[in-house]
Amino acid sequence: MAKPIEKFIKKVCVQNAIYWSEPTPDGSGGYTFDIPEDIMVRWGQTEAVIPTATGEQYVCVAEVMVTADVDKGGYLYLGMISDLDIDEVDDPRSLTNAHKIMKFEKVPMIFKTDEFVRKAYL
Image (cartoon, rainbow, N blue to C red; front, side, top):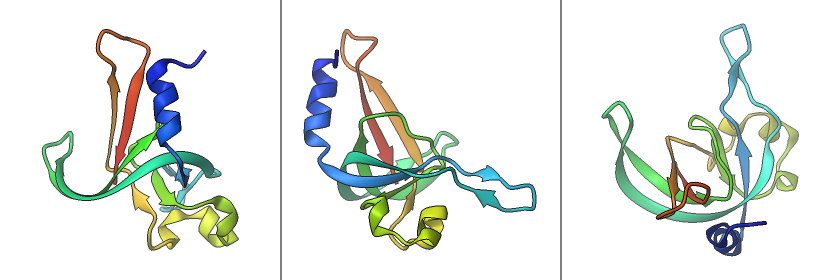
């Protein structure tokens, strides 16, 4: 049974996005991506300076609420897989508006250990 906060997040995540998990080395100096998946998100455009775990800072272009965990180093694109060409599906870096996930937060609700709010910063 879905938890109350998870039900709410699913209600507000009404935009289609494509998620590629973090790429893996292909053995010849490049990287390959797993098959992407269509997910529902709430995509907020923003320009904010965000610190990384190493203390560096970057300018975040979007704060995206997601309904499941995503990989730091993965990619998000606002749209659907069916809208893309095969080359674009294979490598999100070929898309102008696909963004690398620079930070992922998973924050538990107050007094809960099994309900979370998840955000990806691009």
